[in-house]
Image (spheres, rainbow, N blue to C red):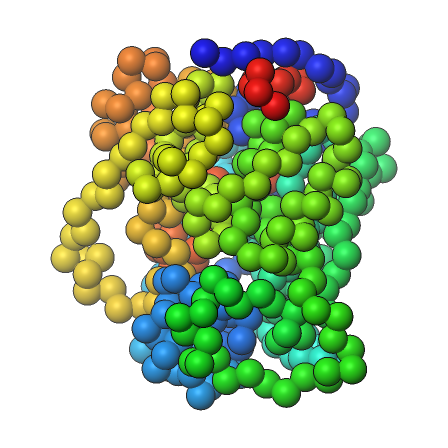
Length: 382
């Protein structure tokens, strides 16, 4: 049973409380890298579960680029860019206002007083920003090459601010090597060739988490945390949101939650990893949690030897545009139609080739700025 209690609403240009209310305005990422960023310490930590074997082979190359056979090919870039543009046009065809980040004109070196890397474009825009009500919340990066990524969104955020939105930026971490809680990666800590850092600047574990660790369920924010860094992030987020919201921590996966648990509307969600069911809060275990098996990979999939930065589950990274319509990877249209038939969902396919290479699909690529809905409490227990 789903408990619903309306709490409040904002008449703001920026207004989104959940993942399913009718979508009115969205930012769709853009700007594709021609090669992967430097294979530094933070890159290998973040993508640990997907590139573990590769990082072991390249453990001595802490700042050099990936070997040529592991680089993103020009074909991948062109095809993915084509699909992202078609996806943006599809959203616009449904009457949704689509905004876009600026695109970097060249690959830029970035440097702080403690480390250096290469800047990354704002492609998966949900990763480092979230909308809660009329608040834009920029989260602290956990990858050095993403440190200035949100700069490509500043023109949009500033305009939203001028039109009444709140704008919060989390404390920016130093990102020293000892800033990171390595307990999740203890099986492979010897493969990381730590660069020497200025120990004088060390302040221990820092606040580091991605907005994509969070799933918005009205007054409940489900926050996936697998480290002390993200634990600190959950505390910080709760402080910013106040008593009106309940930030609930779970440990379902390594980082981003939206390839494991995706709510489609109150009472219905996709559960993409069955092992995570028992780790959900009890009030979510009473929902209809729909499991979708991974598809069989084609020979073309198997022949593509480029590095994969996301698991195959990323193809199920669907986007809801209202309470009965989702956009999905074409390979899963049929099975999702079958699984969701009794819930009367429309399932719209949108091609997204190479989403494993670019670590994001339809949900990751979007930041829903405004949905037509109110803040509600869906759980009697929270």
